[in-house]
Image (cartoon, rainbow, N blue to C red; front, side, top):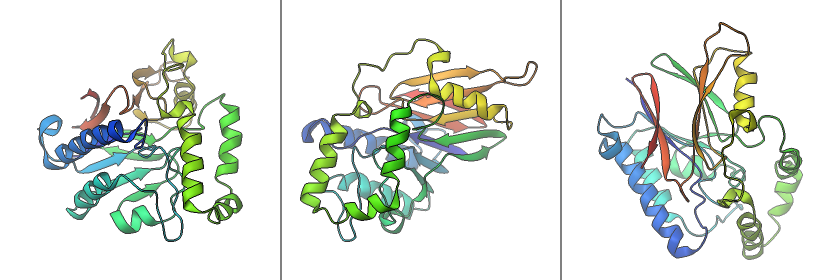
Length: 259
């Protein structure tokens, strides 16, 4: 039986070192409990763990340097991976600039686009969720710039003391690091990712969509666009700034957890 544990949007580094360290330790407890089969994972140790984006509020790998901080979390991920539990790292809009260090040093499997997996009959799409669905055109334009190889190469020439400080400041100013001003659920029809789920469901049979990015824990039905066809579920993992939520899949069933 598959036992899959998923979480996203820790945004390690904000809003300050003290608060960030507290959240880091709490996230590590979730990781270690998942790997050990205790606490929320009392039915058995995870067979897979998915870190679904924006684990760091900013991440950029220079050729010979990475941002300071997060060593406890990095060490925990490495220990779990070394123990033989597959750890999947999905890049988000704050940690997309990774170029091999996480895979080589921690042993994670990296994903830059949503993936489809089947667990005991439950077909799932898993990904961070940024830039998907209708709307958010400003971010979609920015993402094209941030993912351009030329810009990524050029940024390597900015000294880390300047590059990390500048990017961290921009990250703190964005909504994605946990601001509450627009983290409000109104209706499914107002959710861009819900619309994305419906459009994908029209093309292929899926049972569950699991995304992050929204910073709001959600568990919504996704009706099939064609009458009479089976519906699906859209689960948003929330965040580890305000909500401290995650999800698990056991016996072919997905569950949103409030930890």
